[in-house]
Amino acid sequence: MKTKHFCLIIALLCVSMAASAFGTLGHYITGQVAQNNLGSKQAERINAILNNATLPMVSNWADIQKSNPDFKETATWHYNNFESGLTRAEFDSLALTTDRGQNIYQTYQLIDRLQEQPSDTIALKMLIHLVEDLHCPMHFGRPTDRGGNDVPVLWFGNNSNLHSIWDTELIEAAKLSYSEYAEHLERQYDYSGEPFNKKMILDWAWANYQLAEQIYNDIELTTRPYHYMYKYRPLMEAQLHAGGNHLAMVLNSIYQ
Ligand SMILES: [Zn+2]
Image 1: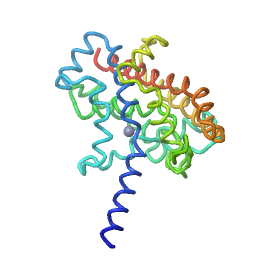
Image 2 (image 1 turned 90 degrees about the horizontal axis):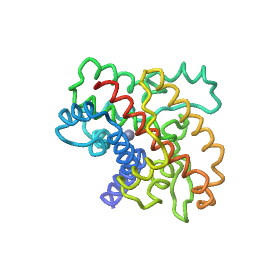
Image 3 (image 1 turned 45 degrees about the horizontal axis):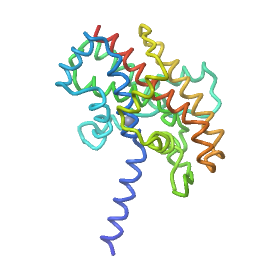
Image 4 (image 1 turned 180 degrees about the vertical axis):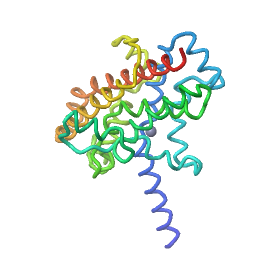
């Protein structure tokens, strides 16, 4: 009986850990969009540092390391926690603090680290993942609900939650491979190619926070999943492309 309870607890822990990660497919897609928009010199330098692995192939590395005791402290770097109703000034003042805007703060830190030491493979793999997480709206959830993980949603008759809808369900519903999805996005959106500066990160984060606000205010619509997909899939896809676009801007700047 005790063994049975132990197994149940382990199983529940595994489910809760899986639910807290940005979906694998989403990371692959944003990684592929970024890869497609690297400059030729930057692609060559990054390829050498990553030992011939592509950006999508290292995009999920940081999520896997959360279970590695050597990277235990990085588990909180993947998300931010903000209350509802912040003004832009309030948001900016909280965004670069380690208890509220960890994802934003650590992205800044890693960019500084790579500007000093561009061949730091671990910092590069971590930055790739964190810029991608920075574009997932449920990584800007409320401090009280673990980024929507504690907001239950009945999705096509199955128990899910608000975090999973945005990190996984909406993306996987298209039934596309990561390269097919990246191609689909690049037919809809162009690479902006703007020169990167770090202040842009706060603008990207603010846009994502505002989308999170809209998502929280529209939870009722999840009871009609087809309507929800009709309304929100385009916004989810815009975020996926923005993640890849911005990641390419950051990397093109560091490795110029
Ligand atoms: Zn993550």
